[in-house]
Image (cartoon, rainbow, N blue to C red; front, side, top):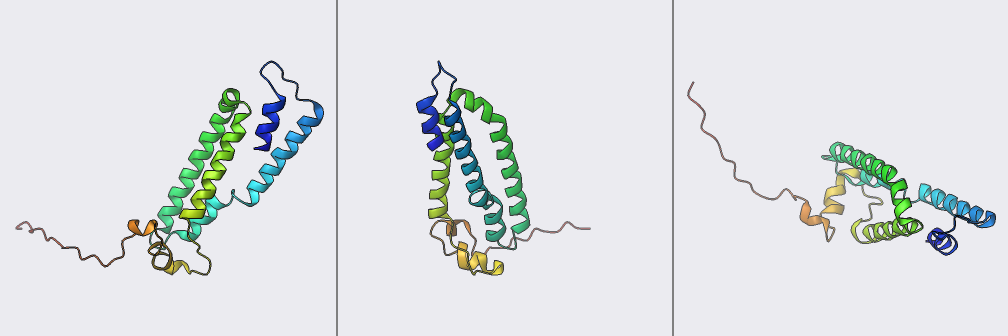
Length: 153
């Protein structure tokens, strides 16, 4: 947000002169953002899935997570320069809005898993959560098994 405001106030379409001091300030804030992202949000895309998938679906879940993570990293890397040219300083506000959305997602939709063994993740965490429990099969459903007639040999 600070970078967006600094660039929005200082740089206009008619001028590309940011000034030496302001340029250093922007670089410092970009470095602060990158370093704070690296120890906060950055690893969560790898950490949360590795701790929250039940054992039965952990391998498949982690595989999908890695694929989606790499896909979106590719999309962001490919679209960043184009977005920067069109949105200019507002690109930093755009990514700030996503950080806010992610914060609300974590606050309301990710349960605390501290002290919960991976073997008990489904029962103690996901089946008890107000939102995610509707997507978890508790295993108490009685499914009728339909036997198909065997072909005569």
